[in-house]
Length: 218
Image (tube, rainbow, N blue to C red):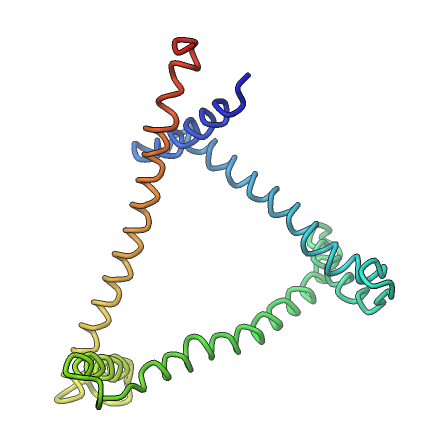
C-alpha cells in the first residue's frame, strides 16, 4: 500500500466532506467536523502533557530537571486536581477555586500586555511629527491624527453630537467604517487564500493520483 497516496486520498475526502456544507448541513460534514474536533482535542492533550505538565510541573516537583525537588509545586498540583472536581457533583465547588485563580492570573497578565499593545503602542503611534516629513508625510500624519481624534469624539457621549462635535463624530464613524471594511476585506482575502490552497491540493495533488489508485497508471 502506498501510504503517501492513501494520505492524499484521506485529505481529499475530508476536504470534500467539509465543503459539502456549501450545499447544506449533512452527515458527511458533521463526521468531518467531529473528527477534526476530536483529533484536535487529542493532539492538544498529548502536547499539553509532554510540553507543559511534565517539564513545568512533574520535573520541578520531583527534581528531575535540576536535582532539587520543589515541594511548592504541590500547590498548583492541587489546583489542577480541583479542575477535575467538576466531574464529581459533591465536590464540584472546589473547581471554582481553580477557575478563580486562572481568571485572576489571566486578567493580571493580560492587563499589562493589553495596555502595552492596545493602549500605549497606539498612543505612541499617534504622536507623529508634522514637520520635516515632506508634503505626503505631512498629509498622512495629519489624516492619522485627525482620524484618531474624530474616532475618539464619536465615543465621547458626555456632549451631544451637534455642531462641530457632531461633524467630527460623523467623520469618526466614516473612518471606523473604512477600518472595519479593510479588516473584513483582509479576513475574506485570507479565507480565499485558504480556498485556493485546498483547490490546488485537489487539482494538482489528488486528481493525478486517481489513475494510480485504480491501477491505470502502472
